[in-house]
Image (cartoon, one colour):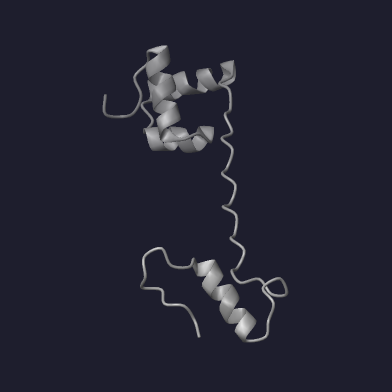
Amino acid sequence: MLPDLGQTGGPSLYRVVSLALRKLGRDDQSQPVMKERKLMPKKKTVVRNPWTKEDLRHLKAHSKARTPVVEVAKAMKRTEGAVRQKAKTIGIGLGHRR
């Protein structure tokens, strides 16, 4: 018979399971009681592309042409945020609604 789990200070879950396995004729070393936990997937590493002089020339040209930020970002293969931040850093306006 299995021990009562309602008691305070009663046996641990591992102890109860091992007793139950012994009653069934299995040894707890022969079969694992609990499944192995899966590891968390590794996080993506951030890839940073440095701004070249050519990139800055293109950014200034797009600024003069008043190209929308979305199109500038796609053309330069960078995010909108990166393009906006660089334009702010070098002190140029960007986008068609300035």
